[in-house]
Amino acid sequence: MTGPELYELPEAGTPIGTLLTQLANAYPDIPAVTCDEETVTRAELEAWANRLARVYAERGVTVGDMVTIALGNGIDFVAAALATWKLGAIPQPVSPKLPLRERQAIVDLAASRLVVGVEAGLHGERATLPAGFRPGDDIDPGPLPEAVSPAWKAPTSGGSTGRPKLIVATQPGRYDDLPAQLFGIRPGRAQLVPGPLYHNAPFLFATLGVLSGQHVVVMPKFEATAALEAIERFEVDLVNVVPTMMSRMLRVIEDSGMSYDLSSLWRLWHMAAPCPDWLKRAWIELLGPERVFELYGGTEAQAVCIIDGTQWLAHPGSVGRPVTGEMIVLGEDHEALPAGEIGEIYMRTKSGSATYRYVGAETRRHGTWESIGDLGWMDDDGFVYLADRRKDLILSGGANIYPAEVEGALLEHPAVESCAVIGLPDDDLGQVVHAVVHLVGHASLGDLRAHMAERLVRYKQPRSWELTSEPVRDDAGKVRRSALAADPGGG
Image 1 (cartoon, rainbow, N blue to C red):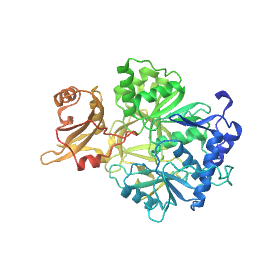
Image 2 (image 1 turned 90 degrees about the vertical axis):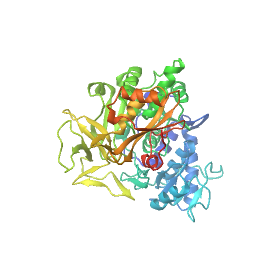
Image 3 (image 1 turned 30 degrees about the vertical axis):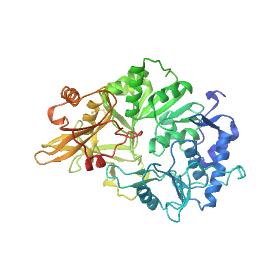
Image 4 (image 1 turned 180 degrees about the vertical axis):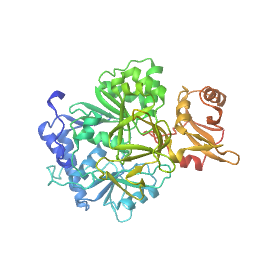
């Protein structure tokens, strides 16, 4: 393989649909995407995407249309996104596991021209293509006329309510080199994508990696040992994970007694969920502070914070300072709060221009500031700290309890694989803390209660418990608390 030193980031503003063509023309035989034991070169991926785009066009897809992609992780997913961009259309990824009713609600919001990954007839008269579909070799593999989508992505978010909304990017389908520079995406290197591609961060990292000239290694599904082996096998330069993955990989390293070569790993990014301090420190010790990075910001991207391990050690618990946009902490009456005081975090772009538009929801605004619902505070140096989501805050006997703090303490127990903490109604206290805990080792309820008593004041400790052998969070670190609150177990 040609050395990484021969590669540079593509030119900003280049239409996304033509980038792969340029990469394939320059170095056609270099691996572009690997999933399991299947690898496609740049030339093979270019031909695949071009053929697929022509199939989409036959089904009516044109500039500005949304294409709902309901595929699992794999090369098929990447090819579908690329084919969509080549037509100037908008990829709209969703989980392939969504029940028909939920997917139908999203397809209706998006007015999708095509739904990829489902059988014919499931969405009425809308055009569909089944999972596993691959275009025939008789279809022209050559480049298509240049087209630019008006919005380069339209992921969904249901939040804790479960009501879907589309977050449609205002940036058109042209390459933006700023995220690649911020993330440290280096052309010619390998990136591991362990998270589900239908989530915004894995989608962003994976597609940006392909378009920037990386070899993107996609895991069909996250598994801790397989992830560690992939980092070693492919000499992975960059990986984007969530704390659940970090915890599972750390447990494999500690319990297996095996030594995994992680020396190639230049940047480990984590985001999407709160990371307990003990877990962050463990990875900083394992890799070195200069290689551990955290990002905070919504899919809406009004503002983004970044912090590396060195900065974090000086400001433990922080998610960094804004590197794009601005943030402010406001109180109940929308007054600006002083350093150290918890309030709602509001964001805005420095230019005043919009980075997104919602379909199916309204933005929470105060003047030019917007909120995605997070609570937190800033220190005297402008570093941001998160408390929790406003809608997840538990009010018990007049006290504020932040689920992330309770979950972080629970995850310190070696038998706890994942967990979620919610507030349940209580006639006396208003709400009480309920914990749903996924165990992978032996631990009695008494063990867990003693563990929490050593770490948290009494009113923050769970009053009721549900112990399960099933994962509580998905591979993106997400949990739908409203569903847990609607059907809590007892313990």
